[in-house]
Length: 240
Image 1 (cartoon, rainbow, N blue to C red):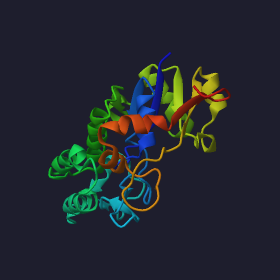
Image 2: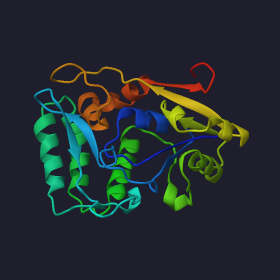
Image 3: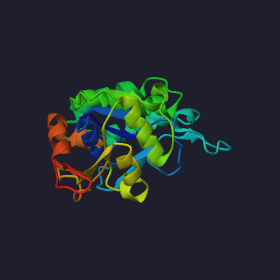
C-alpha cells in the first residue's frame, strides 16, 4: 500500500518535517497553496550563542499581493538577507561540534542568486534529503497538476500519486474530513512527533528548532535523532 504525505515548502523546516518525509513512499511539496504572513513559509527559529531563540527570515514582496500562492512569492533582494543568514549562522554556530558538517553546504546555497522563495526553500529541502539520506521521491504539487483546498487537496494528492493512504500531521483533525477521505478509499494515518533532546551549547533544550540546529549539533547522527522522535498510528489504531 502506497502512503503519501504533503507539506508546504517551509523555510529551514524542523525535524518532524523530515521524519514525515522519511516515513512515506511519496512526499509532495505543496507549493501552490496561499502564502500566509507570520507562518513558517519564510522564517524559522534557530539558537543564538547566548542561549536565546530567534527567528531567521527571508524578506518577501507582499505589499498589495494578497492571496498570492507560495510559488508566486518573490524574495525582496533589496535587503541583504543572504549575508545576514550567512553571518548569523557563522557567528552563533561556529563553536558547535559539527559546524563543518553543515556550514559549507548552506554557505554555498546562500551565495547563489535567488528570486522566488519556493525555489530556495525546495532546494534547501532537497539538500537536507541528501544529508539525511532520505530516499523518498519528492514531487512538487504545481508540477504534478495537484490542486484543491483542505480535504479535497489531500484527495487530489492521493489520486495524482496513486496512493491508498495519507500521513497527516497531529493537528489534522482541525481541518480534515477523515470520513470523506475514507469514503474515497483513502486510509488515514497520523504522525505524532515529539522532539528528542540533544546537546545544545547554551541554555536548556529548546525543541522544534530548524533542522539547521540539529545539523550543527548532531552532525552525522542527525537522521537518527530526527527519526527517534517519530511515531505513526492508524487514525483509530495503535502506534506503528
